[in-house]
Length: 346
Image (cartoon, rainbow, N blue to C red):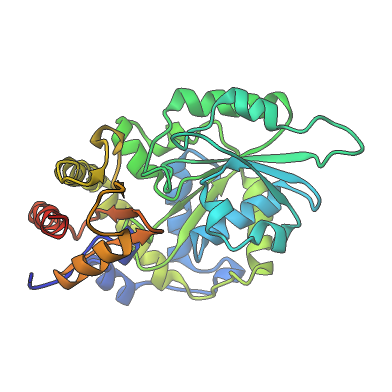
């Protein structure tokens, strides 16, 4: 048994750094609904510059950021195209229907990466008897596809299809900075062809709360009103934004380390009998693997057994496990986790 839990369930379990805690305690604050919180204003300006957009708005969660974008870009009775495993379709509680009156048109893919031809076919032709397409949503990196990454060329190709049909593009970039680190580029470059982009501070960036939605000045003005309508006006939230500023300065530059440890974790686990995992598919900090039919345990049994050994993992259904590396996971933790999996599977 190890001395402390090695928590690989998600990068949302990260604790704020000491620098974040100190910045939060010292944060200068004001009423953000009035636009008077200087720390939030600084964070929004930094996020807009980081993403290559004119403006940004601080929101409580990635889900709210995505749903604000959907509300801004669509009208009730329209459709949103997204990959079938996307976060907005699977993990946002049907919010696009409940809050914006829109329906998803999911497209199934083998690796979570949309193909331009698939999007072209999915766009509904203008007709009085068809539900019109209003928005294309992309996800990069793709959570349920094991953190797979779309490169700049594919992003541009997909956006070009949308543009030909007069459709806006929203990027769910919850972990866009992990994707950029993998490609050796910037998040702004990956988001260049998107009208809006959301990224999370509370995942790999280790801040306790918050996400940013970035876009044009006009779009973000609209988004700010929708944020208030959705209950996201947070008043003296500069205390939270202060942690986000530290995250951008302190944690973002080291995300490549999380990606490297994700690949090392995959390399080790792939050698364990009874596990189906191709390490080449692990591009960022997310590791998905399946248990073969002959495996001695189910995914819930493996997850439970690992927890008894001090390694926390997230089981998905009967035969799948997800592990996610983050700044609190060391090289030694990766080795320990691999050893624990090996012991449980033999």
